[in-house]
Image: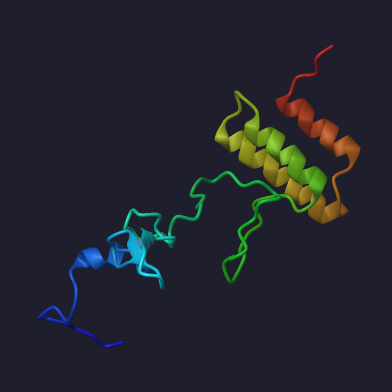
Length: 136
Ligand SMILES: [Zn+2]
């Protein structure tokens, strides 16, 4: 891993972004001698390993958790029960709530879950009342 190349040991920086299959020209020659579009970069010549959808926003859907989680989960930030997550989603999407209020309500849910093991209907109703005025 020790490679301090002072006199460029192979490669312009551009190569880093070049498709590794076709080498950056977007075409590859198959075994029949035909030139076709590179299946990896689809002809763009750019490396496509990174094109996977990467969610950098803070919004997290409960059914959509990243599989490569960090080694240690320090603090739970999202309810673990289905009901709790649903409620937290409602809170997250609720208009007119400050981020702080949302965070507080979400934490309430998590707390409640850890105490009761689930979100009781009474609790959910109580929480909902705080961000969703009962309509008659
Ligand atoms: Zn390619």
